[in-house]
Length: 77
Image (cartoon, rainbow, N blue to C red; front, side):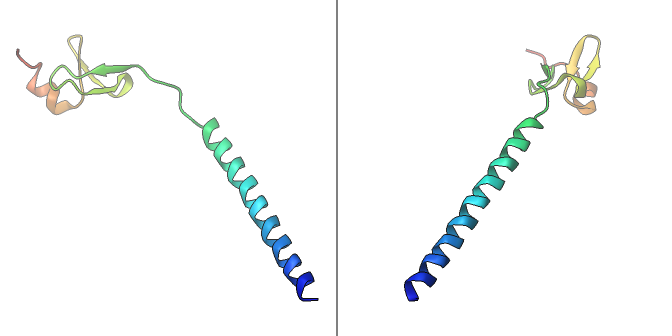
């Protein structure tokens, strides 16, 4: 009787462990499908940091990472 109970406990533990692994795999697969498409990156004319093109502040054909760097202008040198 004792071995039957031990076997039952082990079977339930194995079943829970395998079910959890499948749920984790489904969640990981769903996360991979939701990745955003790559965006073009541009360098800031003031500091050189790369930012996504849609988020860049553009003035006079130059790209800036923020309005503050746009105000300061392009780096000299």
